[in-house]
Length: 150
Ligand SMILES: [Cu+2]
Image 1 (cartoon, rainbow, N blue to C red):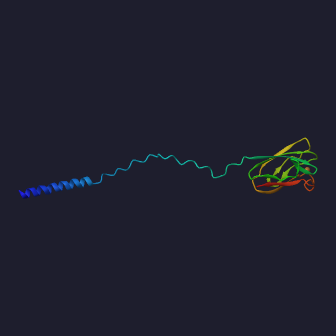
Image 2 (cartoon, rainbow, N blue to C red):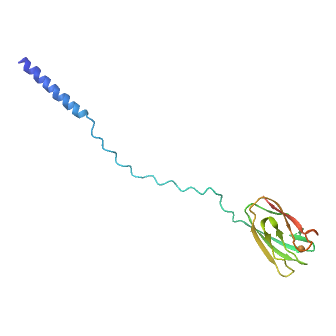
Image 3 (tube, protein in one colour):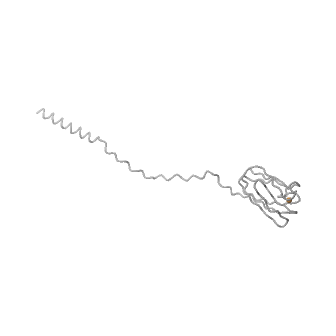
């Protein structure tokens, strides 16, 4: 009788052990559901290049014998920023003149009084450049000044 009880206890122990073993068997790993792409795409970065310079600087200049005049000033410094669009409204108060900057290939028509002209260019490099009149000896006679690009 005692043996039977021991046997039953052993049997029960085995069952429990098996059950225990089965219970502790790790469940089959199901791959986690794919994470939905909840994160929005990264915001678009602004372009690395600086914003385009759309600034236009306009200067009204007259040519006389033999100087340029702007706002009552003779052969004034013309100051702009790099990248500015420079617009020169040019007319002759007397004589026959133009307005030229070689480094920017800027050149107005050669005009007499009553026929105003203009030229537009982008000052895309820094420095101090001569503007002058390309008619005859006018540059040597004093028709020259500085375009300063900063
Ligand atoms: Cu001239």
